[in-house]
Image: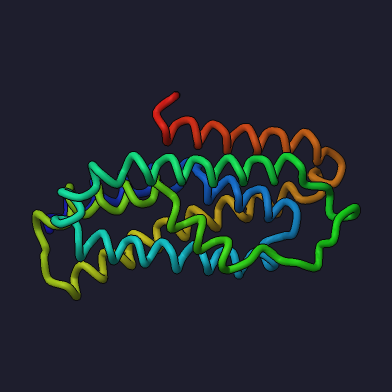
Amino acid sequence: MPFTVFLEMTISACITVWSPGPNNILLLSTASRYGVKKNLHLLLGIWTGSLTLMCLSGIFCSTLARVVPGIQPVMKYIGAVYILFLAWTTLRRRPPSDADTGKDPSYLMGLILQLLNVKIIVYGLTMFSSFILPYETRIPALFLFAVYLMVLGAVGNLIWAVAGNILRHAYDSHYKLMNLVMALLLVWCALRIVGLL
Protein backbone atom coordinates (compact mmCIF):
# COMPACT_ATOMS: atom_id res chain seq x y z
CA MET A 1 0.00 0.00 0.00
CA PRO A 2 1.41 3.41 -0.91
CA PHE A 3 2.13 5.67 2.05
CA THR A 4 -0.31 8.33 0.80
CA VAL A 5 -3.15 5.77 0.79
CA PHE A 6 -2.11 4.59 4.28
CA LEU A 7 -2.20 8.21 5.49
CA GLU A 8 -5.63 8.81 3.93
CA MET A 9 -6.92 5.61 5.53
CA THR A 10 -5.55 6.62 8.95
CA ILE A 11 -7.09 10.10 8.79
CA SER A 12 -10.43 8.69 7.67
CA ALA A 13 -10.32 6.02 10.38
CA CYS A 14 -9.53 8.54 13.13
CA ILE A 15 -12.36 10.83 12.06
CA THR A 16 -14.75 7.87 12.11
CA VAL A 17 -13.76 6.19 15.37
CA TRP A 18 -12.89 9.28 17.40
CA SER A 19 -16.18 11.04 16.67
CA PRO A 20 -19.22 10.61 18.93
CA GLY A 21 -20.77 7.20 18.53
CA PRO A 22 -22.37 4.54 20.72
CA ASN A 23 -19.07 3.25 22.15
CA ASN A 24 -17.62 6.67 22.88
CA ILE A 25 -20.80 8.13 24.40
CA LEU A 26 -21.27 5.02 26.56
CA LEU A 27 -17.64 5.23 27.73
CA LEU A 28 -18.02 8.93 28.51
CA SER A 29 -21.14 8.12 30.51
CA THR A 30 -19.84 5.09 32.42
CA ALA A 31 -16.42 6.63 33.13
CA SER A 32 -18.09 9.75 34.52
CA ARG A 33 -19.97 7.42 36.85
CA TYR A 34 -17.44 4.71 37.72
CA GLY A 35 -14.05 6.01 36.56
CA VAL A 36 -11.75 4.54 33.92
CA LYS A 37 -10.44 1.66 36.05
CA LYS A 38 -13.91 0.15 36.59
CA ASN A 39 -14.54 0.37 32.84
CA LEU A 40 -11.66 -1.92 31.87
CA HIS A 41 -13.94 -4.92 31.31
CA LEU A 42 -16.23 -2.81 29.13
CA LEU A 43 -13.23 -1.52 27.16
CA LEU A 44 -11.91 -5.05 26.67
CA GLY A 45 -15.31 -6.16 25.40
CA ILE A 46 -15.46 -3.25 22.96
CA TRP A 47 -11.93 -3.94 21.75
CA THR A 48 -12.55 -7.68 21.36
CA GLY A 49 -15.70 -6.99 19.37
CA SER A 50 -13.90 -4.39 17.28
CA LEU A 51 -11.01 -6.71 16.45
CA THR A 52 -13.48 -9.48 15.61
CA LEU A 53 -15.40 -7.20 13.26
CA MET A 54 -12.23 -5.86 11.64
CA CYS A 55 -10.96 -9.42 11.01
CA LEU A 56 -14.31 -10.49 9.56
CA SER A 57 -14.41 -7.39 7.39
CA GLY A 58 -10.92 -8.05 6.07
CA ILE A 59 -11.36 -11.74 5.38
CA PHE A 60 -14.91 -11.72 4.04
CA CYS A 61 -15.21 -8.23 2.52
CA SER A 62 -15.74 -9.39 -1.04
CA THR A 63 -18.46 -11.84 0.04
CA LEU A 64 -20.06 -9.37 2.42
CA ALA A 65 -20.25 -6.74 -0.31
CA ARG A 66 -22.80 -8.96 -2.07
CA VAL A 67 -24.62 -9.91 1.13
CA VAL A 68 -24.65 -6.60 3.06
CA PRO A 69 -27.40 -4.88 1.02
CA GLY A 70 -29.82 -7.50 2.38
CA ILE A 71 -28.42 -7.54 5.92
CA GLN A 72 -27.58 -3.88 6.49
CA PRO A 73 -31.19 -2.61 6.81
CA VAL A 74 -31.97 -5.23 9.45
CA MET A 75 -28.69 -4.69 11.33
CA LYS A 76 -29.03 -0.92 11.39
CA TYR A 77 -32.47 -1.15 13.01
CA ILE A 78 -31.33 -3.76 15.53
CA GLY A 79 -28.33 -1.57 16.34
CA ALA A 80 -30.50 1.56 16.61
CA VAL A 81 -32.92 -0.18 19.00
CA TYR A 82 -30.02 -1.31 21.18
CA ILE A 83 -28.60 2.24 21.21
CA LEU A 84 -32.02 3.60 22.19
CA PHE A 85 -32.06 1.07 25.05
CA LEU A 86 -28.66 2.42 26.14
CA ALA A 87 -30.07 5.97 25.97
CA TRP A 88 -33.01 4.96 28.19
CA THR A 89 -30.77 3.31 30.78
CA THR A 90 -28.43 6.33 30.69
CA LEU A 91 -31.34 8.72 31.27
CA ARG A 92 -32.55 6.69 34.26
CA ARG A 93 -29.12 6.35 35.86
CA ARG A 94 -28.69 7.67 39.39
CA PRO A 95 -25.50 9.18 40.78
CA PRO A 96 -23.00 6.77 42.35
CA SER A 97 -23.84 7.92 45.86
CA ASP A 98 -27.49 6.84 45.35
CA ALA A 99 -26.89 3.64 43.41
CA ASP A 100 -25.12 0.35 43.88
CA THR A 101 -21.75 1.00 42.27
CA GLY A 102 -20.40 -2.46 43.05
CA LYS A 103 -21.32 -3.79 39.60
CA ASP A 104 -18.82 -2.62 37.02
CA PRO A 105 -19.73 -2.27 33.33
CA SER A 106 -19.23 -5.73 31.86
CA TYR A 107 -17.11 -7.29 29.14
CA LEU A 108 -20.24 -8.85 27.62
CA MET A 109 -21.97 -5.45 27.46
CA GLY A 110 -19.02 -4.03 25.51
CA LEU A 111 -18.81 -7.04 23.21
CA ILE A 112 -22.54 -6.99 22.39
CA LEU A 113 -22.49 -3.23 21.83
CA GLN A 114 -19.62 -3.63 19.40
CA LEU A 115 -21.14 -6.54 17.47
CA LEU A 116 -24.39 -4.56 17.01
CA ASN A 117 -22.64 -1.27 16.25
CA VAL A 118 -23.51 -0.49 12.65
CA LYS A 119 -21.01 2.39 12.62
CA ILE A 120 -18.12 -0.02 13.27
CA ILE A 121 -19.43 -2.64 10.84
CA VAL A 122 -19.65 -0.04 8.07
CA TYR A 123 -16.28 1.36 9.18
CA GLY A 124 -14.60 -2.04 8.77
CA LEU A 125 -16.20 -2.72 5.41
CA THR A 126 -15.31 0.76 4.16
CA MET A 127 -11.70 0.68 5.32
CA PHE A 128 -11.04 -2.74 3.83
CA SER A 129 -12.91 -2.30 0.56
CA SER A 130 -11.71 1.25 -0.12
CA PHE A 131 -8.18 1.36 1.25
CA ILE A 132 -6.76 -2.08 2.04
CA LEU A 133 -8.03 -4.77 -0.35
CA PRO A 134 -7.02 -2.91 -3.52
CA TYR A 135 -3.40 -3.19 -2.31
CA GLU A 136 -3.24 -6.21 -0.01
CA THR A 137 -5.02 -9.59 0.08
CA ARG A 138 -2.73 -11.82 2.15
CA ILE A 139 -4.34 -13.02 5.40
CA PRO A 140 -1.42 -12.02 7.71
CA ALA A 141 -1.42 -8.50 6.28
CA LEU A 142 -5.21 -8.25 6.58
CA PHE A 143 -4.94 -9.29 10.21
CA LEU A 144 -2.31 -6.61 10.86
CA PHE A 145 -4.56 -3.98 9.28
CA ALA A 146 -7.48 -5.24 11.41
CA VAL A 147 -5.35 -4.81 14.54
CA TYR A 148 -4.25 -1.34 13.39
CA LEU A 149 -7.86 -0.22 12.79
CA MET A 150 -8.89 -1.63 16.19
CA VAL A 151 -6.02 0.20 17.93
CA LEU A 152 -7.09 3.51 16.35
CA GLY A 153 -10.57 2.89 17.77
CA ALA A 154 -9.11 1.93 21.16
CA VAL A 155 -7.26 5.25 21.35
CA GLY A 156 -10.52 7.08 20.65
CA ASN A 157 -12.31 5.00 23.30
CA LEU A 158 -9.65 5.88 25.88
CA ILE A 159 -9.92 9.59 25.05
CA TRP A 160 -13.67 9.50 25.69
CA ALA A 161 -13.29 7.39 28.86
CA VAL A 162 -10.68 9.78 30.29
CA ALA A 163 -12.98 12.72 29.49
CA GLY A 164 -15.72 10.94 31.43
CA ASN A 165 -13.35 10.35 34.33
CA ILE A 166 -12.44 14.06 34.38
CA LEU A 167 -16.13 14.94 34.50
CA ARG A 168 -16.78 12.44 37.31
CA HIS A 169 -17.07 14.99 40.14
CA ALA A 170 -19.33 17.22 38.05
CA TYR A 171 -21.53 14.17 37.46
CA ASP A 172 -22.29 13.86 41.18
CA SER A 173 -23.65 17.41 41.26
CA HIS A 174 -25.32 17.54 37.84
CA TYR A 175 -26.13 13.91 37.05
CA LYS A 176 -29.63 14.59 35.70
CA LEU A 177 -28.37 17.13 33.17
CA MET A 178 -25.37 14.98 32.17
CA ASN A 179 -27.58 11.88 31.82
CA LEU A 180 -29.98 13.87 29.64
CA VAL A 181 -27.19 15.18 27.40
CA MET A 182 -25.60 11.72 27.02
CA ALA A 183 -28.98 10.07 26.39
CA LEU A 184 -29.80 12.67 23.72
CA LEU A 185 -26.43 12.04 22.07
CA LEU A 186 -27.23 8.32 21.97
CA VAL A 187 -30.66 9.06 20.47
CA TRP A 188 -28.89 11.24 17.89
CA CYS A 189 -26.59 8.28 17.05
CA ALA A 190 -29.59 5.95 16.66
CA LEU A 191 -31.43 8.42 14.40
CA ARG A 192 -28.31 8.88 12.25
CA ILE A 193 -27.93 5.11 11.87
CA VAL A 194 -31.45 4.70 10.48
CA GLY A 195 -31.05 7.76 8.26
CA LEU A 196 -33.47 10.10 10.00
CA LEU A 197 -30.81 12.78 10.53
